[in-house]
Image (tube, rainbow, N blue to C red):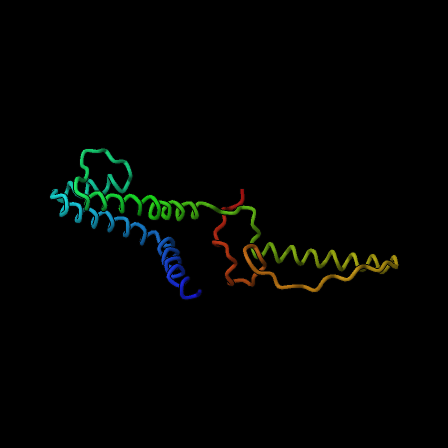
Length: 170
C-alpha cells in the first residue's frame, strides 16, 4: 500500500514546495505561457506574438475569441492550459497571497503565555496559602503535560506553527 501512495506523496510534497515560493509560482506561470505559446505557434502556424497572446488569453480564461485553435493538437493544448491554470496555478497563487494576509491578532506571543502561566502559579500559591489558613484541602492538580502546536508555549526560537508576524497593537 505504501508503494501505491508514494507517487501521491511526492506530488503533494512538490505542490507544497511549489506553493510556498512566490518566485516559483510566477516563474512557472510565465514558463507555462511561453511554452504553450511556442507549441501553439508551431501547431497552428501562428506568429510568436499571436501565440503568446493566445496563451495569455487562454490561461486567464478570458477567451476573447479573436484567436482560437482549429487543430485537435491546439485544442488539446488549450484544454491542458486552461485546466492547469484553473485547477492548479491560480488557486496556488491565490492561496499563497491569502495566507500572507491572514494574521491572528488574538494569538498570544510566547512572552504573554509565560506571563499568564506565572500569574496562574502565583494565584495557585495564594489559593493554597489561604486554604491552609482555613483548613481546607485543595484537590490535587493533574500532572503537567508538555503542550505543542500552534499557540503553545514553545521555548523561544522553537517553531510554534505560527508565522511569527503580528500587527502592532493600537
